[in-house]
Length: 493
Image 1 (cartoon, helix red, strand yellow):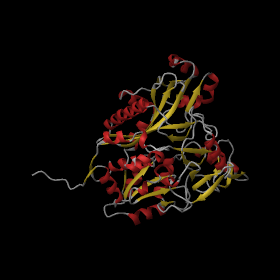
Image 2 (image 1 turned 90 degrees about the horizontal axis):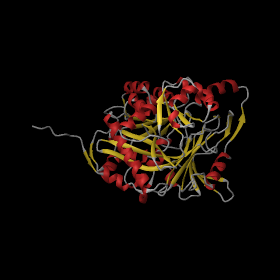
Image 3 (image 1 turned 30 degrees about the horizontal axis):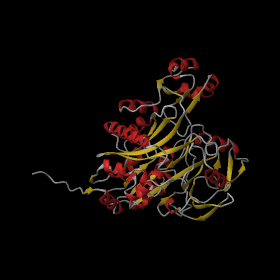
Image 4 (image 1 turned 90 degrees about the vertical axis):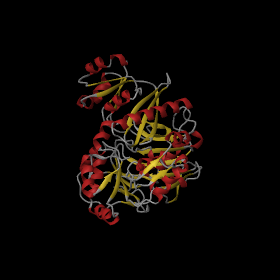
């Protein structure tokens, strides 16, 4: 006799939404902040955030920020997560909320093999492919080779070990005099180098030559875009194509640094959107064959001279754009993309028409929103003495900004004169080059048709920055600067 499965079967979006609204299993997002998965707790019962930074000053009902205990300086977001997971207050919180079947499930922005070991010992199931596979896909060198296997074009490039400028000229002779070099790992422009001559090379020679292999690309005139997707057992679900804000000096000190996104129905012609969707599906199927499942993001580069669309890089995880994807109108009409990620680790079977869902997530169902990621752009190190609250802010006629109310959700913003600000840097923290001050999310366009910051975006940036105050460091300067020199090498978003 054939044994009948006792696992429930979810048939379609309505069943999936109902399942998560009734969810009994504790699920945790452990990260520096709640930013990347903000709002998921409204869709998933028993979803909680365990964070290092309290963006909401205790006002968010589902965020736990444990008290500070002594620790080594953090040099990565993995360090932050490992610190949180072994924190006594966090361990007590997990024990208190444990379900009969176990401690619960956990998701991260970043994690490593040490994180996996801590989770196993704590009885937490990590709802992501293992760290080793994620690292392989995240590696810009191996990601290029994966894209080649999937039939996805990258900017003309060569992968090679570089030992000197003469070596670079030799291996990249077919790419022209201006090239872009990337090392295997790095975020927000930290390890992307624009080389037009030997002087440029000398500025970055140490990092380039230390790498076992680098990606050397032809310099093209391009615009960046991003697209998030999710590999499921029924195929790859693809989110909307977003423009990327990159390298604006008002927002970031890094020339190639990501500093925001726009979701706008008219940002890309239909053929470009279609190409990006097909590339995402092909990449999703290739990494599924490697054992990957769940959420990932692709960066695209659109050549302004040829209109070719190239793969830029891959992020096998949730990203800084995930809040835009998961809180958009189409997500509220169906379900946030991240719910399909959680389904892959749920103890249920589900039936889903992925092609039908992808067809619905078209421009008619996309409402225009943008986000600005505001960093400290100077090389100074200062103590922050004043910082704006997280919540709803209003842009006044005179260009100033005014705090309206405490809020934990950007969907309560009603018009383009309002914005939801999520504060990262608070009083008592430090400004240092690249430090994240906060993120502003607001309806409407933030860039002009030629992809420059528009007047409203610049006014918002000036207004939010005016809410911060700081003082030069005193006697604490040497120790603080040494610590921040390490901290400044990774991002928390």
